[in-house]
Image 1 (spheres, rainbow, N blue to C red):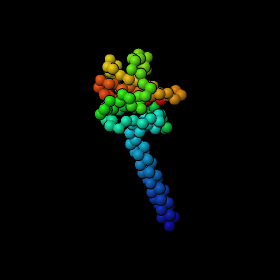
Image 2 (tube, one colour):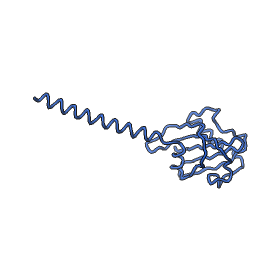
Image 3 (spheres, rainbow, N blue to C red):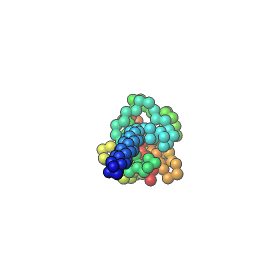
Image 4 (tube, rainbow, N blue to C red):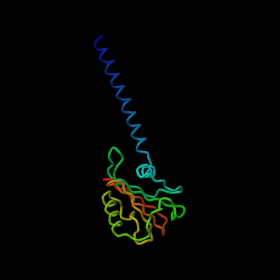
Length: 152
């Protein structure tokens, strides 16, 4: 009789643990399915233009709050010149900004062929929040939008 009660208790505990594991896995897969564009919009309070086609993404280690370095390349169907995303952007080349982007991309092991082509004509802007930065780079020659998030 004691053995039967013991087995029922063990089965209940195992069943309860299985439910918890399934729920946690469900939350993890739901959390993991958030798109990069949604992360950028949420973290930086920006609105990305419609019609972007995600070409390449890469992220480094991310903490429990979702902070970490991320990189995304989007093909645009139309020019972004004049869009709200590039309101305060500069057309002037910036070697320091280029070096900073390369350091972030090197740090998260982005393949060199996926780097922005800094010899092309580009528009850029940097959003900052404390030590965090979002580099926005739009290559007018290739219609590619590069978003590089640096959150140490």
